[in-house]
Image 1 (cartoon, rainbow, N blue to C red):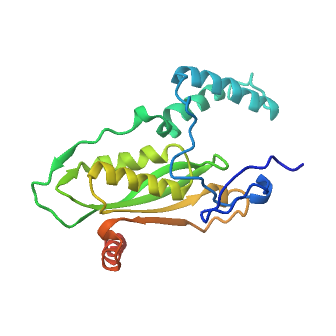
Image 2: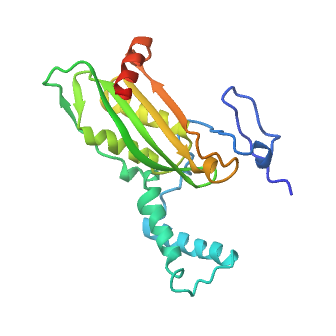
Image 3: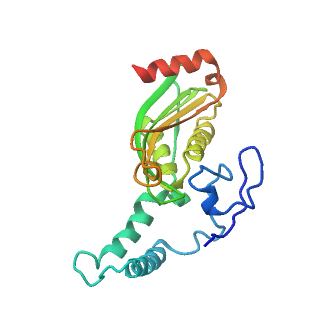
Length: 232
């Protein structure tokens, strides 16, 4: 059976209207930098969302033939609902966005600051299976600095939602530019996608690397300097 056709755009703008979901396959297709969220996404409370997810997930388990009266399984729908809303997809809710305070750069440090190997767990929006990786972020102060832990929290916030790695990279970079009030920002993400390693092509050795270089970072000398920091 041919699945429903979706209207999608390649990065170069070509229309993919006449391609089925099966024909598109596992291609990394994204329609913009913003996570696709409905306008009424937050009309329901988190409690109501968890109740509905638990009910719907119990139906999925029932369709698969699992015995929901079993002691090991009967609590699974509620556990999954709580995990979705409170943990792995908590980055969908703007109320969970980290609050960031900037401080005067009293040390007069004007070279790049690099926070590397920020471990994150996200989920592929195409199959809802994990993306596991590390993010490296860097910036040059415009006169203000940020607490180091906030860099980690910004990465985690955007990772905790159904994602495409290219979008995740750009969302982190855009947020950093806004909060740091500078274009001099770099983001590199190196991640493994379980939709590649555990299903489909089943390649357990490959990884995906994406990057964003803004401002002075978008020069060969600064890219080389940043890579030197990351490789040491």
